[in-house]
Length: 208
Figure (cartoon, rainbow, N blue to C red):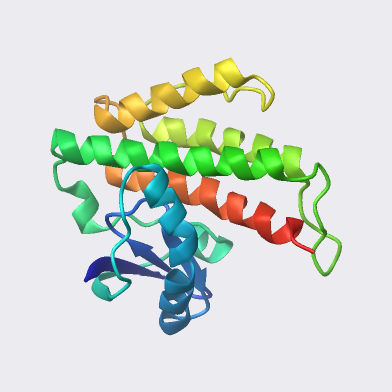
């Protein structure tokens, strides 16, 4: 069984797999959120494989429910479950870092293969590829603060700077500094979720 928690907001519910950072999906209610999480399993299996792991069968065990907030309803997993505060063994921290790195690898690969202009939404909205890349990096600059770091987001075209930026984030996940406000499990989940959410958006808006 895969331990899952539900973050229940007024308008949106997130279902997130505790041990697989980035495997989080949202819907209007608990049942649909779990269905969305299961539907995303083949996509997330690519991430797990990139990190050298095999995703188990998707039998979920809801082990925690927690109240959401305006962040939840806006569309991001913003609550920190109790389990996230448990100490991490070095091997667990290394596993988290590998899965976050894999999420970035998938995001980079999807972005590189996509056209610069993406198909618009039903009302003509949605960022194009380069703006999504910049948005993900900007958000990670904010997430760095949760890990106790002060990092300026690099330009989306500066591969060396992006590498250094990500290395600093991974180091903080493995060895959180005293200033960290977020536990590493939550930080890894939020970083990987955001990268994958936009990777899958790019894929969906590239398909004809």
